[in-house]
Image (cartoon, rainbow, N blue to C red; front, side, top):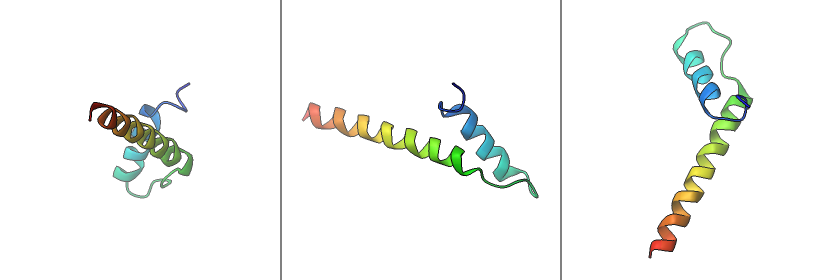
Length: 52
């Protein structure tokens, strides 16, 4: 469950960016965050279109 919710991937990417010499960015975490961003954008646009 924690792998598909955006909280753990966001924390992992934030820690990877803050710690120098770390393992770097994890691509699956980035994909999860981008998917959540796209879902949020789609819901927002749909709500705005329905109001007009």
